[in-house]
Length: 487
Image: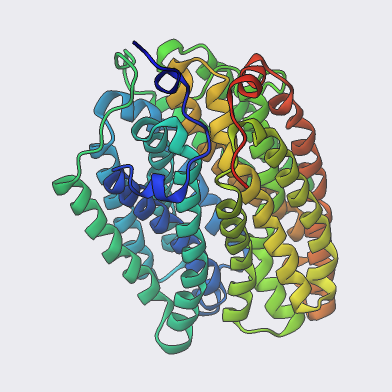
């Protein structure tokens, strides 16, 4: 006879004790190491960037160090779902780590900004692939009940990366050379790639069959070209030239979305990826706009803060890292929240991030330093509150066959937002006089423009969020079946 205790559903609250003893240590280590490679390298490079520019030049291409990395990340992330469906997780993850190692090695040996950018592109392919594949692994290898705790652990590693990344970058700049910073990550990525290839066996996703047809290289090339053209429009701001490049990039982006929507089972992105009327489209549009709105701190924050406030590269790096630290603390704090509260944390988190962009418009040009760090921390804390639950909510609202594409699309669209955002703020700051700055007052003016022009993007993302938060039959089922989480 079946008892009530045997048939009752498990509560959606998962304690840390239950999570850590659930037997998922190996995939958790794999996911965390992949995130470490990407997150720590990004902050190391942001901290080392003033030293790189001082040695080899290329100030006009500062935003490209972000854009080119994100282009590679977008291409790898967009392809990750198809690669996983065809080859499982092991081969694509090993390839991503080795590509990352090659890019770091090339940047370490570069004598010009051009070669650094080529290396950054390879790093983006590897790092973006590792992050997107890690999200797919979370959805494919972990039970749904453990997803929030898994993302909290990943966020903790991101926070550790935020602490150690600027420290490592500052140490290399102060006591050695920025080249050793790239070499350090090349060695780590090489070891990770060999470990994945030889010793780990991540499983396949749950879809029944691989998508048919050839790999969509042309679509990926068009997507890459779109971001390159838009980024090129911001390097040297001239009305006709910049307008033509941006329009050409926008046309390529539109064609990619249009063609991908008609690719059937070989689609790279979920159906209607930017339609705010659908949960998936609302989620991806929200993340696209929020990422565009917040990239200015990473792309230009260290350079502007050192010029305005005379702080060291290490201090500027840690202020930027406050965003990742805030993300981690917030994500860990709320990771045990039951699924029925997902909408609350997503709405609160995105609201806090929007407020932080407005706050940085005042704090970066005027100080004091602690206020800049506070708003940087709130920027990340808002994402941390929401991010833990975005993946869980949106995958609950889509058909199971779309789960892998949605899981891979979330970090991919975030990276697309960073790339397009870096191009966007590059246009804003170069038009505002970034290349002609002569002192702190000029830099303060550029910083004000940077964050004020980022605020409308955050507001658009906040509006798009409504499509994800509106009530759904799934929410009614949660209210009826989920017991309250313990206090």
